[in-house]
Amino acid sequence: MKTAHAGWVFVTPALLMIAVFFLLPVLAALGLSLTDFDIYALAQLDNLRFVGGGNYLRLLQTPLFWKALGNTLFFVLAGVPLSIAVSLAAALLLHSAVARGKAIFRTALFAPVVTTLVAVGVIWNYLLHTRYGLINDLLGRVGIHPIDWLGDPRWAMPAIILFAVWKNFGFNMVIFLAALQSIPEELYEASRIEGASALQQLRFVTLPALAPTLVLVSILTMAGYFQLFAEPYVMTQGGPLQSTTSVLYFMYEEGFKWWNLGSASAVAFLLFLLMFAVTLVQSFALRRWSEP
Amino acid sequence: MTLRSQALLVNAALLAAAAVSLGPLLWMVSASFMAPGEASSAPPPLLPRAATLENYHQLFAQTGMGRSFANSLFLATAATLLSLVFNVSAGYAFAKLRFAGRERLFRILLGALIIPAQVAMIPLFLLLKHLGLVNTYLGVLLPSVANVFGIFLVRQYALSLPDEMLEAARIDGAGELRLFWSIVLPSLSPILVTLAIFTFLGSWNDFLWPLIVLTDDDRHTLPVALASLTREHVQDSELMMAGGVITVLPVLVLFLVLQRYYIQGLLAGSVKG
Image (cartoon, rainbow over all chains, first blue to last red; front, side):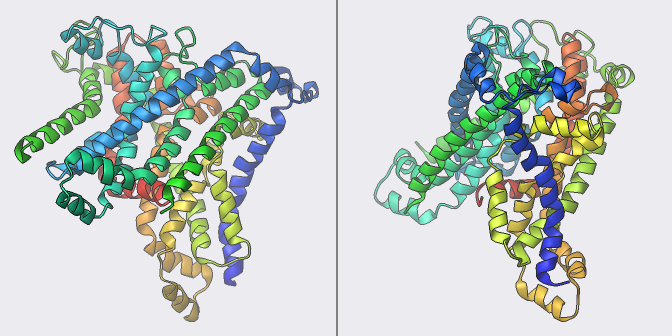
């Protein structure tokens, strides 16, 4: 077998699987989003009609879709910066020359990342309980009245954001830590000789050196946060008053509860377009930042 | 600030952060040994008055979580083996076997990474329904068998294999399959471990797709079973915590044992990518 033949033989199985079970369905989703595929079409394909942009137009007039979009944007715009700030702070602490037991602390802070989202979501359900939850108990000790975290429309999304940050910050922390370790020590030496304080070092040495990593991390994190689903599914069921219904949660209900598969495909595509646009802007920033 | 007070501050902050990270997990373990109803009292107890295995007993005897545990274990193991079979050969070929169109093909694959998996889910569900694979384990497995991230991970590692080693084997008359099996695979072993742990954890923790595909209770994976248990038994917090423990503990232990490989893969996938 020649090398070139071998190459094709080695990649074909994987490529076939990806084509059949990913790329083809993505194209089909675009087609499906232009039809009125519903429970009747599911039973009998003759009932399927082409509706052009009808699903998209109707979605743009559906209040719950806008609500879900707003909730998701809130989750992304508040959650991503908070999560990155916590990750960066944790990485700086771990990187500090005076920190002890770094390996153990790193493992401890990273542990929530590998846990099962549904399971830890259930734990947080109880931690956030209005009467018996540890969080309100701790807040009560400093004189803060009990908050109905998951039952109050004003607090449900902030509670989910706190939970998501707790669950995810370790991931970016590890990436930041690797980036911090790759900053040459001479840069710090030079700034020390010039009399820079620790804060000035952070501002003029560390953060500029981390800039490309920061943008990269924010691209990856945003992509993940746009896909909010399991948290509201387990913790709030999209409520109260639909204050935690995300775009994906809306898609799941539209598709697999009401079986409006055409419309649900349109939701998936709109989410994809939004994510694509945001990523495009960020990659542009990454190119700008990476230029020497 | 003196060095000493700085050290005190940094380590105190790390301790506090570790307490926040591990606290919920430790409380889960503790509450899983409490008597029914004990956790729901004010102020919330941190430790059980008298530790009991009652919740675990009830969990396996009455809720079918034992079955779900077996399902999860089977699916995650199968997903891992299949992923190794499909992604390793492809990743190696993209790194080391020259063929026409290789670079363009690889760029297309990387480009596909931007499309979120949920876009494909609805047509995928219809495809599986057409094939009679809804509510089967195969239906859960098929879409994740080959994935771009896995191929990318293996390719990045395989790039570092010396060409001379491969050429020498070819000159000695080794066919491409022999070469792959007896020379390439052994030298790729660290990245195989990384790919295996990523796939296993990913499959074990996956929620949305198994939720859509598996309709029967007795086929549910742990996250799906736990989610439906939450919706039925909201008040039995101790029972739910026992369910959480058997869901989280296996992956946590696996991570602790293979941590080095996991972190390596995480960095390879995000920093160099």
